[in-house]
Image (tube, rainbow, N blue to C red):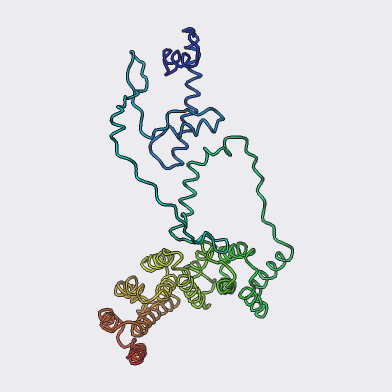
Length: 427
């Protein structure tokens, strides 16, 4: 049983020149016509969804017909919905409104076209399209092409697609990659220093950057609490960052999560007595350096990193080493970040540290971790005072200064002396 009536099939046949279509034939053809219509409509809905639209248009229907190598419909290019009028019981036809010639003649003239002019701008610099108003945004232009490129004649015929070509490194590049990664994972200090120097100064490593970024990500992921390996990997990341011939910003999506793992992970080593605090400190400095260097190119980079540190610092279920790394990360991002994300929570956080300092607490590891967290908070407050005294008038940060003095007291005296020296130099 088809949803199409026999009268509709008869009208379609008459439009194709089949005037003597028998009634039985119409009933037999109705299921097949319905099936073909459903196919076309389903394909058209796919084009509608890919174009991020909520309304199905005639353009989507034409795209669906073109994808099936069928003739498109002409004369139905309007973007508005079509209106139908009833000509017989159960039979509707598109309404063709009458247009008065006087209305067309009395309509205002269209605007004059702009005067042709020539303007120059950079389309690409060293193969990279600059983000300027004259150039289209890559994501937007790609979305627009995906919605309309099916109407291109190149897609309507038989398209011969070339197979994907796998990127193959030369034997020299493969040997270099092997030697560098082996040196990074080795315990030979001289080999590691040679690898860091080569990664910093060699300008021809752009082909190896995808492999190096993947290596950093995988080694951090599968480090198995190897603190020495994590330290070497972080130094490798900084060596690549210092290489002026590499566009390392293209691979930050793999490197930053690995570095944040070294800062905020619960257990960087199997033995808590090892100096994992230094690794967290180095990673926090490296993240701050990345944010300072690429913050203008990616305006949301520092905000997202600061949000990650802030969430880890406020989470009471996270261990103290994670809090320590989060405090370091917020401290190295600058005084404004500390003033807004770190200092408002000092009172609450210090209250959570007090039970760890009690004499009844026999957990020496927890006591050491809490002591380090308290110490880095004092250091962060002192760094804030020093940086603000060197760059801003004292009246601007006096409320924060009073809060820090009330919280830490005499522990800030060495930093306050340094801040006064900065202020005297500025005066």
